[in-house]
Length: 481
Image (tube, rainbow, N blue to C red):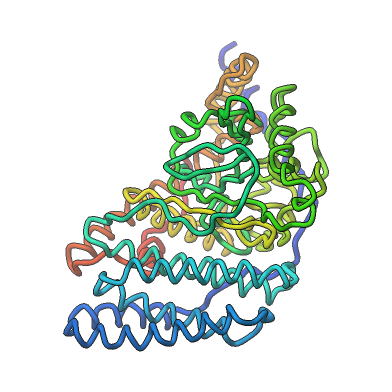
């Protein structure tokens, strides 16, 4: 009887529906290994250079940087203007010099934020779905953040102020505080969690990013008590307290706020409050399951980006001016195995490139920033091998146990509790997720050992491209788990 039940539970489930909404774009690729290796050589040379000579070089680079940013600030420029490429290359050139001396870290970060504000201003006049505009803003915002973090990671003990204030965008809505940052009702918090699936979400689209989750802040007008409305794969759309939000491990987050000069907001500055209250009440009124399909046409379920999108859409503000795409056929197939069916959608990282939003502040955990880089590098290598034909395979003999775990999870879900298999995942998908996590852990452990050996031998933290190479060396064809 027991054997018969076990064999019955081994019967394969239905294959997931194929992709419904396909993207036909070409994933972005830097293809600049020569530049990255050259920057590392410059860093090593500058570390051994006389401080006065290094200071003189940095003065020249800073003069060029000021000239370039002043030109951008005085003119509205198209995304293909040569000043942007020059500005980015000069910023990259400064990074190893600043990292070698460390005394210019504050100026370097301040300059980065100055450029970031200008690019957000410039992009208000660009077609954000054009390839030229997308590539330009991605190179500048993502590329410059990467350079800043490489500098920060060379700081002794990696000690730096986790909060970075960028623009105090005016807001008429009630306010609260998170991690020492003042936030307003209607703000969007774009964050990166510590789970493997967080790395997959942040890296798996055409423009690999740093963020994997979006939450919308609602602050009660009378009590000024803040809540976060967010969609989780484990329990669907839920309302969290700030305490719970902070307890759910964050490697980083960014505060984004609708520009106060948007036409609809100049007519009604309380729209962000109304949008937040609308989705808050909607989440209270009924259970909204997580949308693994990432289908914007289905309002009965929501994924995390959709929560903020729906809230503002209700008041005729359409966020994600730059629509997200996932175009690699192999990555599409991988995500489809987990239930994703739509690949022209809304990805958390891409919200940063919406010109309707200002970046108010950014927060990074100094103790886990390097962990974030390692997780990204390992995920990039897994996706690289997925694109080359590797598949995530499960052990069919484990399927009955996964189904029992799913049944237990369903019971817990009835009492608003989380089970071992997320609410929207089938037993097979839950098993694939566990295999995927184990694969990431195996590569990560080998990569971390190589990193430790690198630091002991060279005396500095390896930059991202070195971690990527170590992860590539650590990758082995998957075995059944």
